[in-house]
Length: 289
Image 1 (cartoon, rainbow, N blue to C red):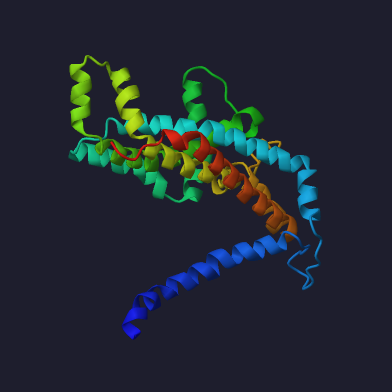
Image 2: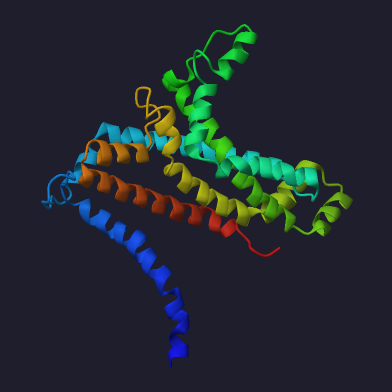
């Protein structure tokens, strides 16, 4: 009898940890979204939907939603396009290729704070490498992180550089799974490189693309550290993402109820986007070659 329950007993600790540190905080956050709490008081009065109502009527909230959507719409396609283009040249097995894979993947496992600090220095107005290169070309200094129209592009560049290696590694695995016979057949039929990619490669890596699309969109909606270190949501709220607003609302202004409501809305946005992507792309994904 004890042997029968042994497997359940062995997984019980990790199940309890997941319940305690994942699902319980989610439930608490959902409950707090209907209450007013400032961390200081023991009272948490129920306020119904007022937190959600205040958010929806707030220009700051819709600005953060817009900025996050723009960031996602630009950074995700850019990441995936660069990743598959580079991965095509890293599918062979050699010491040089393995070293390049490691070099591309290194930023993905490097501290986001360290990356943000280094890139802040690169794009510094007075002592940055970017402006030093422009100066050598006779171009005046550009205030990258102080210009609303440029700051978001800097964040996109930095985030793409950081996450690109992960996408490349996943694409390399997907490309290596494609049988070489298909490429040989396409070559015999006189298929050019672009036609071979469009008709053979891309359809067969659609499962990989679909997976990376979902992961990339979720990551884009959750970006925080790079923005917080480099711009703090500025200038003029031009890089104020949803998670940055959530952090500022809950942990700077101590409006935990409204911050929790924003977290719930962020979750709803991600669920809706995931469902839409499944409806639109799900029929084009085939898991058998």
